[in-house]
Image (cartoon, rainbow, N blue to C red; front, side):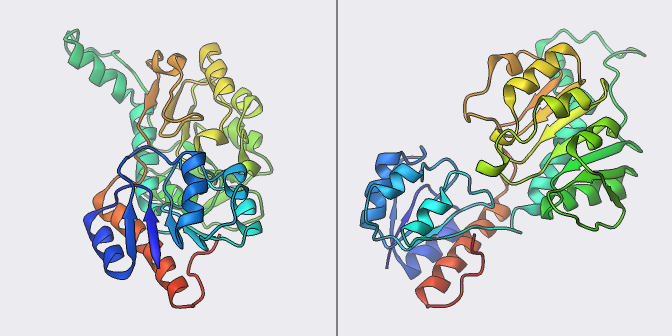
Length: 314
């Protein structure tokens, strides 16, 4: 079976893929365009998509596909119109579990950097304008013992909760689409209820059409003025304009972002704010995690090849 891999993956993944399939690797690191997607669906038995590839309804429905499986590299699949794929007889899988701890670690990084003004402090040192220690210089938010509110209590949300509770003695509250019992955490009735009581609000919900702009003005308006907002889910889960307005008005104290609504474009308004930590979508950026993600994607491809049940169907 021939397999298209949309972007270069770690060596171990590429080696295994080439041993099992007739592999074509695109020669660019740019995401696939709609035109490329349509052409690929007509030419390949299997495709391993990556973040940003434009598997839109229009691109998928424009062809009678040869492709039977999209084995997505990543837990998030909002760049794939799953409904359109299934309507064309194309199965879709993802890589849950492999990304959980690494993404939770980035959430902690953003919490600490924003609460303790670490990005601002590093820029001060690098600029050569730091004049030395001062008793009241760059006072930030002490994370230990604070209330952390999590929106979306799936695998990643629970991993964040465990780190905050066990490592920093935080109280955990959360909002979730369905009722869920989580040890050491309290589920509240709404995102706004979480925002009202939390010192840190973390978005950890899946992306996709059903969660686009899930978090907007009503949540930010409910937050306490000293609180910070962190997003490690998907950029379009957050109404970015509403976040910018809330930061500019002082409705919240700061934000830590690893994802953006229109990646890789980041609004100049966010870049200009000293109280905002901006990371370039580092959530799963470690060799061992990316290798694990690739191997999980290959597990789905190999199961399909063997006529077995897919381990991680979407």
